[in-house]
Length: 298
Image (cartoon, rainbow, N blue to C red; front, side, top):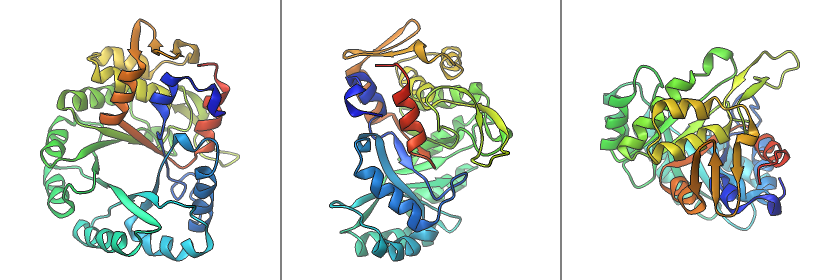
């Protein structure tokens, strides 16, 4: 996507939006390949859309070893570290890594999964709030109780919006409910998986030549819905946004963004991104960026 073609409103919505998760399926790159790709993206004209490099805590030593063969560039990389079952042990590893690698890398976000309030409380106790913590919760059943637990520990929420099989994609109603619950709690969120394309549609689910196809959410759908949720849109309206397949229904200009009868100013988009709709993890950076550049949105 060429930087000059992005209107102020589109930039406000998608700047820094894509956390690069090239280590994860379906790309599943080797560490050195993923790091080389990220370094290239950082040096590209599209770096303004790039977020953090996502890495499991269990692979931090591997990242450190591979760093010797990759030129990270002039500034330290921002990392989002995925915590495993041993949250206390991983918290110690994160602290040591940040102390040892401060010149090259900085873990400034942490992600973990929880399916019950006890796990959420444990994550809060051992990881603390010094580094933003995103807790992935199931989209179904109603995540209200878990999201309230995440709020209580000073964390942020995370939702899985897809995967490598059709059954990994939740119904739009479940994502709408999640967004609505987060908005009511003023709880920032991020998304992960299945958001390689700007607008909802049918796509292959992996890069294999015989990969199955399925209906995938668009990242514009999810993050426009997130901003609208923060502005009071109800769940039925959010479902409509999430299921929108017409790219021309989203219009961006200098002053703001329009979708159907809704209008959000550029300043409101920027504020929504800064405090609520944070980012999404994707094993591809070029797919989201290049496809967005092909759309006549701004």
